[in-house]
Image (cartoon, rainbow, N blue to C red; front, side, top):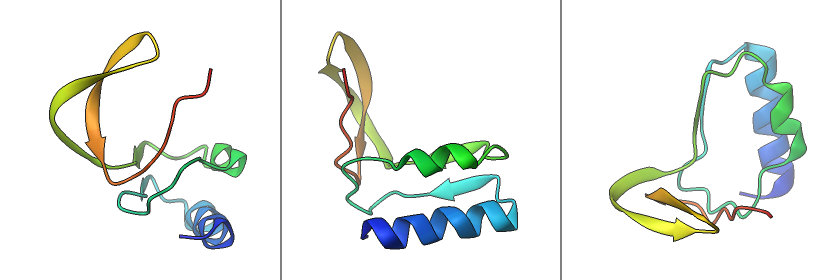
Length: 73
């Protein structure tokens, strides 16, 4: 998914008042700041949880497949 496609999706979700947004499988490497516009959002799905944990930064997080998101420091 391109950045422009993602921004269109965020705008549509905002206009429709969606409470859930599924971005799993989009191979995103970062989220745009515009995601903060979705004040009504209750669920943001970024990938599929799989069994196990991984050490990221100084935390153990559940493993998630479907995106290439990284924690920023």
